[in-house]
Amino acid sequence: MIRIGQGYDVHRLVEDRELWLGGIRIPYEKGLLGHSDADVLIHALCDALLGAAALRDIGYHFPDTDPRYKGIDSKLLLAETVRLITECGFRINNVDVTVMAQQPKINPHIPDMCNVLSGIMGIPQDCVSIKATTTEKLGFVGRGEGMAALAVALIEK
Image 1 (cartoon, rainbow, N blue to C red):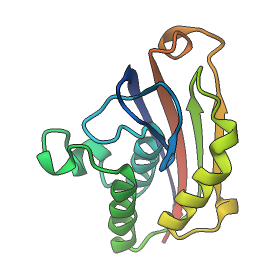
Image 2 (tube, rainbow, N blue to C red):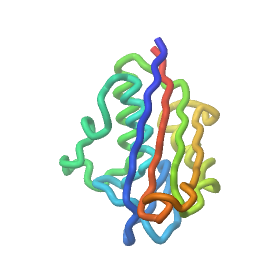
Image 3 (cartoon, rainbow, N blue to C red):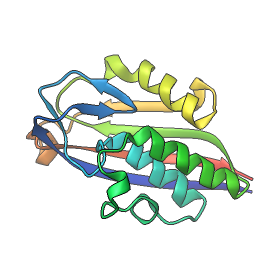
């Protein structure tokens, strides 16, 4: 059985926060605001994996009302998501993520992100695709107010 899932997430950029994206810290004067470390890429990826397994969404499993997840490293959320889908008999085939950000430049960091994420998911690096795009200065992303990510995951039983 093959299943596909999609995930989408958005977080606001603010000062006095570190920028975590794809499980790595990226030097930038702003960071993403959220209950956890607000790693928009990993959050979209978790939703894609959970959706493919029909296990609801990241907010159901890791609610922002639960103090256990305050400031949590999103890599831990991804590891738990992988555990949940594996427990249901699924394995990850491949994932594809697009990050929408006007600044900073994401492309130089993609190899490190792929390395980190493939390790957490237990899949080869060539099964992890990460792309970055701007929104040509349109909308909240284009104005530098936030970032968004869209993810697709293929899993099989």
